[in-house]
Image (cartoon, rainbow, N blue to C red; front, side, top):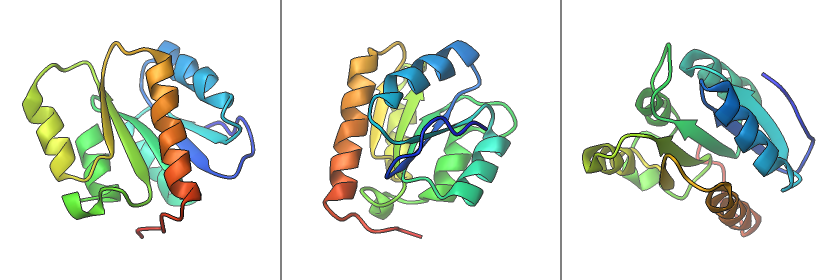
Length: 139
């Protein structure tokens, strides 16, 4: 776990690929928020419990605990969509059933790898704007 910057909101980035984790962290640092990282599913759950992030950028395929299990634990159902934490799930999987299942579990946005970092930054900016507009803690 790394605390890269101190900002108004906490963004937890979860990916087991060090290069992707570093690239995403660097892309999001410009938003001026606190960036936290986790490299597997268990670490993600621990960091989320300890830090109560506002936003998660979550890989679907993770060692130790998969992205769906983390999503289910933190959001759980579609009526949690749009509530803290806001979650963008990332996957290299092309299947629509994964996206549909993520949506049923309350995911707020979904990216298929590879994606441009500008797209992820735009999603994060949108999430920050929603938080600024008064989205309440769903917990």
